Length: 80
Image (tube, rainbow, N blue to C red):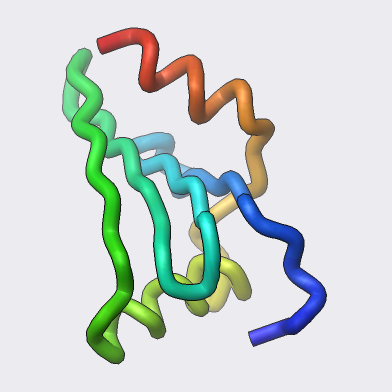
């Protein structure tokens, strides 16, 4: 993982169904959009697969995420 990342980093899946606030290399918040409902969760990466998931998001390993602005993430929190 690159050392020059400035957290938090805001990302979303290109399909618009999941939004992420990457707080650190070991912690993230996620909003899942299911129909008209938004489900919020917070994850601390304690296990290796969770750590790899964060790395994959930050590096866009599968070319499935795009960078968003902080307010796009926050606006979803306020809609539910």
